Image 1 (spheres, rainbow, N blue to C red):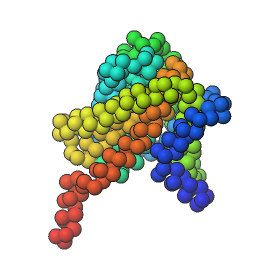
Image 2: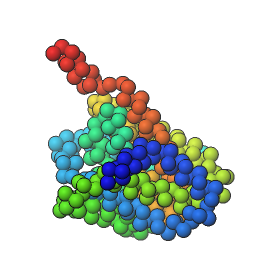
Image 3: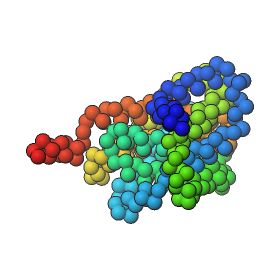
Image 4: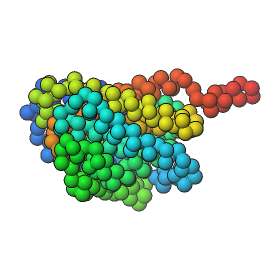
Length: 321
């Protein structure tokens, strides 16, 4: 078990590198990985089950005790990212499938990796976890609605079918994971350290499947899609921070909201795009899975070296004592 825990820690630490390697290998040898395409939904369900295993009632306490930052953060999540994606799709004149795929990436909830990034950035981790949890729970309503309003001009959107997909792929696995954690806490505590390894493996397989299915398209549209994802992520990080600042939140909350808004659940984007649009429409989410896990550590490292006022105050207090 200790060996698996070490491997799990390494997989989490070098996740971005592993995603890039998986994408490159599956691009070079696409036929090897096409077999995984039919398992994308199942794999994402496994990832969400792992998220459910980590959820505890205390994670929802912040919504009751200090709801304003959570409300601001989730509102920013579901306003900034979809509208930014819509604007970028028009600005870059993306083909219909890629435009719809980018709006889809902007309309999914925050990703779980953001919680780690907020911790490293010395942000408000409790706020980050609450935002991830509640934006995910709102996804069955918000994601189909936003897609219907913003992406329907490019591709037909069936909001009811997408609602049912998100319930099956996201909500049910999370609830099952939460129930297992509640009723079998000892078993979960003993095995929780290897859950990141399972989640990372599942996401890597998803990336290989979509990249393999899009090998010709990656070569022709890869640079354009990356530019769109790069701009989208940058707008999310900047505008998320700006919104929190303008509304009077402190630096810890600003960092949490910035990273939460900027980092999306790319795995959900891949699954929904593949199921309801096409593998080509999943490309923005594939690039999102890669780039978000590069930009996240970069911004976290920058902020980690810039202590917040709370940290400075605590440091000065220790010096005085």
